[in-house]
Image (cartoon, helix red, strand yellow):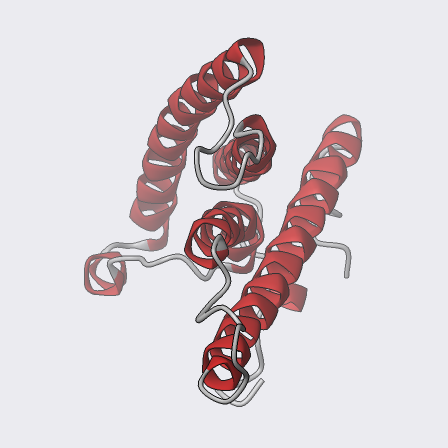
Length: 189
């Protein structure tokens, strides 16, 4: 069943768009993790080969810097899809002690707080990214324009903020909070 099927018809479209942006952001996170894995494997390979090939550098000069960008992108870009799948940490002991109405109110309050905090984060990241772009800041070690990784991190934060808004709407209307289709079946998946 469509996860937003129970929402009022005028809200289904916007909620579906937010879910689609969250899935796109999740794919960006997966690509960042794949690139990070390849970069680390390349660094290991170059370091190993440098012991046997004279003149080969002992590593990739910008590997640490680029890997930190990729890790930040993966972390922020994966947050929205993780939230929609119900994968973020919750205090299950507290939730189990509350009646269903109390759980819903706690979910509503925490989602609203999360929306406010991520909204501030997005505002700050947009300002930070724009400042880097406006000043033409580049990394001193690689000359990578800093606004590029910052924009990817900002996009991830923006999708998380939108997903927090959608979660707040779901909690306010008594709709299911998590998309069961995104949950993993077990530890091996």
